[in-house]
Image 1: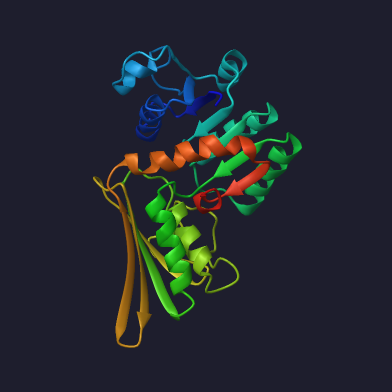
Image 2: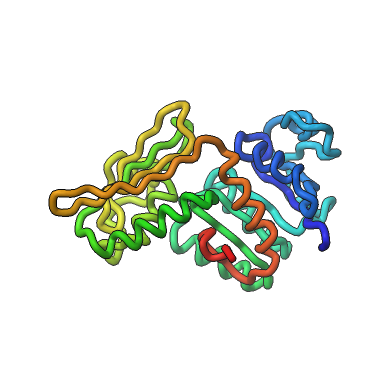
Length: 262
């Protein structure tokens, strides 16, 4: 099996560091670049609490691409930065794995077109946790039998978007209406009680939380609750590594971890 060369964008963030730790434990993925606007010039292994990895933080993604010739770019930044990074990578014919959320349908269509044009794979998931994927599947199945449902999602108070991409994807899968009922596409202002696809979503933002979601279904004299909890960012690493291994075989944009599970 050939080694997959990967670059992590947002490498100094909490998620970026966790991804780097995950990569360091694999035999088939090699970290060849770390992109971030913080700690430029510092050794990323040492910053992450690992042994030196021979990779210095660089804030110029194009320079990293030209020097390291990666196979995959992993982006867990924020929407505006991610959009630029994805465009740059795909135009260079480099596959991307993206955990950033908040893209509109039009923006995802643009990403797909870029990937198709360069015969490259792009993978985006609202959640890389296997448990979260199963939670969304069960919620979709349960929606067939219950006429009322609401979602409560809990994340750290530093999370920019509200509601979360996972909550929106869950509501979309449940699909109580054919289109989102939300006046604005500003995800950071749209919830704390907004409605998507006919489902009310309540966003809780408190320190110490990681990623948690419950879907409540009301029946006659009963309540069904489906809940998933991620207690650490480690829960996302197996899904991210799976996507890195599979994205090179894709052409165009693929969305959702459930679509690449064996």
